[in-house]
Image 1 (cartoon, rainbow, N blue to C red):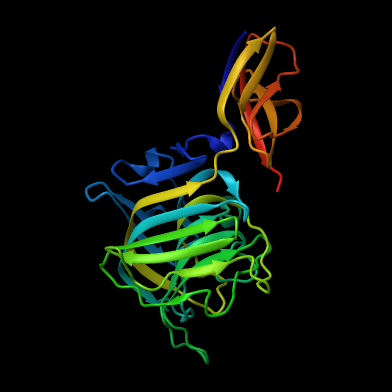
Image 2 (image 1 turned 30 degrees about the horizontal axis):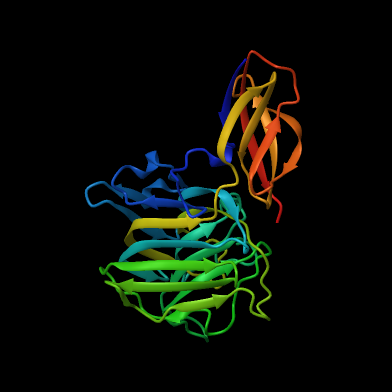
Length: 336
């Protein structure tokens, strides 16, 4: 019997480096990112790889549909998972209220999202209540529309699975007008132990504004859990925004570094032991696992019961009769 082992489909195609029980996705744009696990959803013209300067040229254009330059994480992050993300940002220009009927401000965004939800037809950023599961960096330009004008603000935005926004008053954001044609380093570090996130923005190591600290566990914020599975440079649509806002901005993104918890399936191996096919791998305690097999990589069938992760080595056996050639993959389902 010939057997082959495969990772679960959600884990395929990632460029990952293991360090201190975490996974790190890095992108310096020296090579074509679309050949390194990155993908584009929506308007492909909004994201262009600059092979000469090793940058991603980005247009944030709210007149277009929701569009993302994104990379799957290979796992699902919740409030119990620490993460960090950083990137270099240059804004060349930005203007709000550029589209008739949408005079208010609208965000320039980059961060973590739930891909399935963010690509659905009823996901409307700045539209309530249809924008769940976000952890992102946002910049809003000042506007003077309506009775309550807005100031220039940057936010570490968190939205839970029930569309509840984290908001704890003025400490939830920072007031600053981001400069143009100046390289800024943006970093968000979330620590699960105290559910605290720190957003910092620097130029040549000098803070653009004091760090913004948010505490998701703070009493009175009415904030639940979220489920995040992709990092994206996000150009959101103005459709259904409230108040009606729009943005047209141009800039570049470079040197992305994203650190997330370990993948739910690692060190996967398949073997034939005493005439029984089995797959073993390193598991996590907050995940359930199910073995699937296929003779042709087209039709997949489950084998055996769901097994709870142990935090150590886990072995799943093929309960079906032995075939001449068989492929295996492991499906992982988070339990919290």
